[in-house]
Length: 512
Ligand code: NAD
Image (cartoon, rainbow, N blue to C red):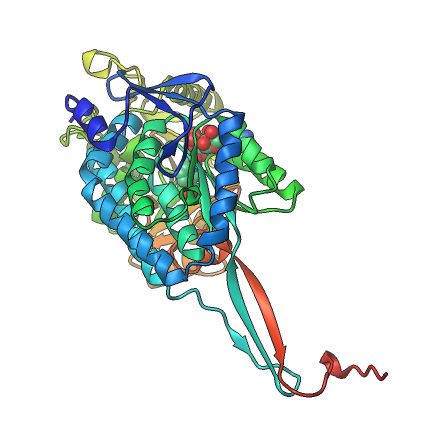
């Protein structure tokens, strides 16, 4: 597939040089700085993008405002029909888009294809949802009155996304926002701009065929500055931002200052508890996939293993054995388990984290290193590492976006849960046990404090049907399934009087 990249780009309509802003299928001239997207797989330059400038940004936002006026008046099931067709279009391009995602981001081909499958699945989910945007009715305390609530679209949704899920996170937001009657402006990660351009090209044909105002789907490619601009811009009642906690704090503060709404999906520091009752034939593969899959660059990657004293040595041995079988290299080659990090900055952060672990007293079980040699010429490949640590090390409480796994011991289940919760982040968590009391305690209100808590499944990955997100420094936002759609709408309570009197609530009398 790497050799075929020219053909893949062509089939997706990605050019050698691309403007970084679009209103539906209309690409705007941009004069921002020109960036090259390099593949971490082999270090090759894939194509260039000229970043969106102020004028292009204004045009995209203005078009979104115009589009909202007509899109919100389409019946929700009619909007769902458009999203259904987007799902069909994505099916046609799944192979090419999956390969581009793998090549531009560095995740395995299976994961690249899986990401596009998630986009398809969320479209299907959104189609059904378009007939289920339910409000409640209540009994009024006043005679001959009717009271109910309804959900209206909020308007412009700004979507800021991270490099590690270059396409799926946008679709989780956009598909739901569209059926809710909102319009979207997407600022993808500047590290994966070509995947975003390909998505914009794939969906535009559907909007055109259905004569939908192109402003429903806007794209502005830029760095943090344009993200900050969106956060400050009062024309966006809702900003959905996925990325680091550092970014989320900046966006949350800016949107909060103008009392706008946010959905924040930020960093994780996910732990798996392996109890004395664990089935290690599930626990070990779950831990290894969670720690090294996507080279540890998932927000749900397993970063900490909290292991019962009695199992500790055996788990360590089995981990060492499993890590010994990992093959690291080109992620498009299906024989490899681990691909590269996104860029050399990420490699530096990995190296700094290793230094810090040692400085704090951590001991290598498998020492990390940056890999060299022809196969690793991009300079982005690192060895998945395991370190024995103490729970309170500063580095252990911090999310390092790389395949570094910390192992630590516990003796009581209460202690294990306390250790699992003793980090600032609260995204995903797992317990490996066949003991019902342990698993129920872990899931109870005295248990995991995370947005996701699994039993006998690793921390990594999630299905679109559930609400996805986490607590504490993970930001508190929820996306995707369940009733996450409510964040994309505003609730209105309506009371209608069909009597000839004007009774007041709480029995208040007001005589004239
Ligand atoms: P990042 O924070 O560097 O960038 C994310 C996005 O935010 C990019 O589009 C970037 O341009 C933009 N941005 C950065 N600073 C900004 C600012 N001050 N104002 C507005 N926009 C700004 O993150 P990354 O390196 O691309 O992604 C990795 C991080 O994302 C990890 O922390 C990971 O855990 C997190 N993540 C979380 C989830 C989740 O659902 N919780 C999902 C994927 C990734």
